[in-house]
Image (cartoon, rainbow, N blue to C red):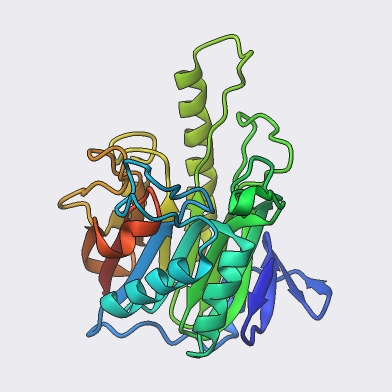
Length: 312
């Protein structure tokens, strides 16, 4: 895990690591000793999530690009500018990114660090399939690829948890984790649910992929239940599931920011909502959300998803 900003500790699974010494301390216990103050009930907590498509989007003349005459691949400046614009336009205090190249994270982190933000990048692969920096001047370079969280609040600890269940076949070089930033106000967690069906698989690939998604959702729910016993939780990211699909069990525990409209979040499939922002029901109310179809959405095949909710 790569972090910037002053962090009191980094969590690995449920073991707190501070100064290289592992302690038997959970996120809940860490919360009790970190001066938990909670978010203001009078002011909504505004957050963002965006799958930014690594370095794949967009080649010149791609019909799905908002600007088909421009090649955005390798353009970290444009990507970072779009992300900062999205933060400012929504007044967000935290953002999660999926399918992020390390070079992209570095550029965003540089700009947010100047504002006093903190962030972390969790590497889930070393670009085994050309997601990152592999198209610039036809000179493929293997770079780290993963997910990132950023917040303007002080981060007491980070955690990452394996969500790759038994039904998910081994994928060389890949690790699927839930990455969280634990602040004095809430735990802010992102995931990217993934599935895989090998070409030589004997059976129904749809059934297999649904089982993989269900298993990952089950692991996520179990982990987050432990957190919201003592603190508010926000879960957001790319779930690769429709709201009424394998992600449906999450609606038992959470309120989804844009559930009233369920606006599409994928450019190529205008009826598809697979990115979501969840606030746990125990601590949040009066949620709202919006899928931004244009403007900052130029850099990815996913649309930016914005959400807000008030503390109870």
